[in-house]
Image (cartoon, rainbow, N blue to C red):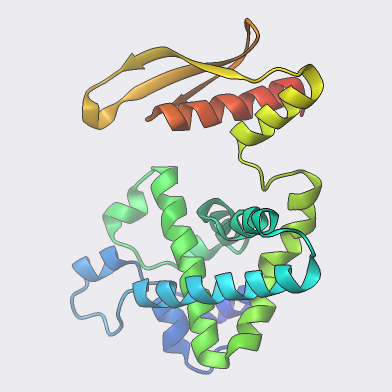
Length: 229
């Protein structure tokens, strides 16, 4: 059994209905191996939590910043995307409390695991909302998500790597980056791409991925680091 009291301490939320918190940590795969488990998986809570998270974040940005819609949309996306939620899950050690199948537990694919973690955070928000209402959910979101906004704005993390690299390249060199496929291999269902990003004729960095877009994003991120941007 998972130690829900320890999880409550980590979340800084004490639940009236402990089953809501427990259900928020149940991945669908666990029920495939435990047919008689007393609770459902967390997908309905995730659905609810996603909406609560978006509402609270949108409300905060609208009330605190006079910026145009496009900028606020980018800022919100940086606060509620799967990468950010997975980072929060890691910070709160939520993985230690998840109910997953043996296969999912042993799966070393970080992309798949981060997706599960991000969904669990949304499910926990949904559980907090059902157990204690909007203000309690707002406090949790303020503490764990909105507190990261200053860092996001200071480091322009709301820009995806390609946008950030292009913006800096045009600002400093008046040049638009060009991406070229250096290598492509594998069958259609399991492609591999290596992409180079160039300023004029100089290749600044390379990136790899299972799609051209993924490889381009990684190339741009590596280029930002190479340039110290």
